[in-house]
Image 1: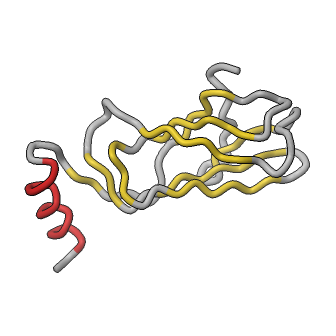
Image 2 (image 1 turned 180 degrees about the vertical axis):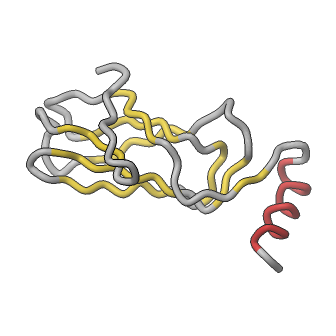
Length: 109
């Protein structure tokens, strides 16, 4: 069975009217980022994801994030919240999207 067929079948039986999409990576938004903190609270644009992973790479000047999912329900009206731990306090390091290289400023914190 192809991944697309499996997605359609699981959608029909589990999600009824919801769509199903596969994705490599999704946009990441940082909800809270306390400079003294050892964690980041993230919002990931993936609805009811399967296989959600957030890769974190830290350097002296930045924290790089990449969120990947195996599949998720289609729709723009929901997201997933995750917390990732850091090896060192965030301090003045920039948080960046590993896929685009764009800065991800926190929306609060």
